[in-house]
Image 1 (cartoon, rainbow, N blue to C red):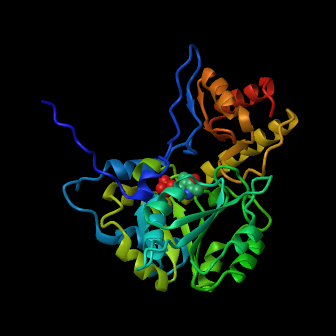
Image 2 (image 1 turned 60 degrees about the vertical axis):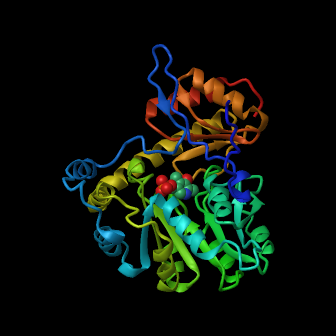
Length: 366
Ligand SMILES: *Cc1c(COP(=O)(O)O)cnc(C)c1O
């Protein structure tokens, strides 16, 4: 007799969660070098010293140093902030999870706290927020892919605990300005944590870039998120961190998963900071390629939102999957968001050229 099982039921919030859809690898095509343009990784990789430091770790049988103190010491010097104001995490996603777990969930009567963010934005946001038991309040981005900051202010209620700003916004591309972020913070109640997710801040070229460190120094409710995954080319090692005043960080240390940064990740991140000039060169090369791609797209008749990260956004709507398929035939993996658009990572010149050629010849409506 076969026994039938009733499978375990997850929490209601988890049952209704979307799964994180990671960027797919490219499918090889005859005579073409395949390129993965679907995860905003650094095509140029880490600086050699970081890769060497990671490869040289001989203490894999030991737990990493608790609280990543050496990395925090290096970051504190690099950013000129107190060591106590930095909390590391398993990627900046790990750092974000600490913030949400500490400040948003459900109260003792079971009522969900609210977390406001723009949408479409980073697809991990609703997952992290709902997993904590909080409610996500998504405020649609404007036609040109920008945060609707006035709409976000208008969405604040007495249940709002955290607001996430993503600048530059993944996947649409525009960056916020310092002026608008400071005005925004001025209109948010002091007890609401404002997170500034700056995964791509190194790539911003703007007249009025967000000076998030000035904002965190001035406002005790601001937390800045940074990562080694993008500009530093260390995505596989999962190293990120938040910067906030101690009235916030003291709580993040409690919600952090212990030993969230491995020894390998820590030494590589430190080496990358020590060779920041080489990181800057890599970022500069990607920014130049981005400017070339944006100019060529515009010449080919594409209207795209301001691109301030290491990626561009094609608002293809219903044709998003069709375009992604056409790119796949050319051995290019891009990231399609069904019914909305396609995000394409700026990569090696050859990959960018092939992508541009596809854009020039793509026959679907845009
Ligand atoms: C890539 C990305 C992150 C960083 O993820 P890690 O966990 O640090 O690898 C965070 N926020 C946004 C908006 C991103 O695009």
